[in-house]
Image (cartoon, rainbow, N blue to C red; front, side):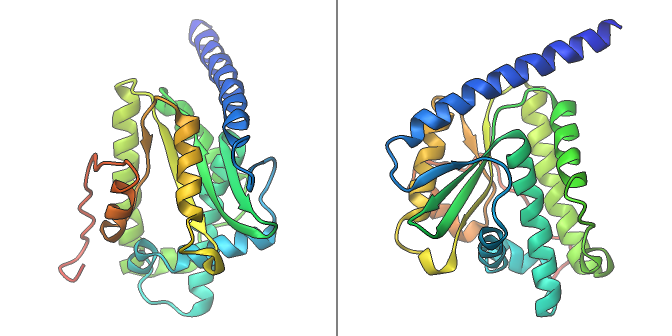
Length: 232
């Protein structure tokens, strides 16, 4: 009974903080004419833009070992929908529109309880009703690379939360193909930093775009060695 009361109290505090974070997000967005806080699910057309952008990213190209177009689309939609669901249900999705969809950033607010974070993430996957693509399961190389990536990210997040370190997490930053190269991603990063305020803001990225984030005030906290075969 004592444990149950403690869990309920922690959950209440977490939701209260989320309400405060939502107010901060709304305040931060006032100075950005084309940025909007999304409530509910991102429209299907916007999601397809993110699938295409993610499928062209270096980490996706490495993770998905040269499948056909159909398999590539299935894996991209599964991975993007998973992080979108986490942000839609437990954080924030901020979109850039002018008036068409240009890009979005998915923000997950600070957690200090690993079990609650894990439960929320698993619930986000379950509510999708979208099973993992058979390609990710059946292709040994892609399955090993996907598992390696997830294991490293999970271990890093768990380590921080067990140290009670508060941080915001960018679980996805994507810009539609036709809007890349004109500063949309930079503007989305700026509002993410405004919302995080004085707390650390974390994300994972491929080595080839580390310099992009360094120029915008980020620093490398940790490097993951994701080699799963001599050819990687």
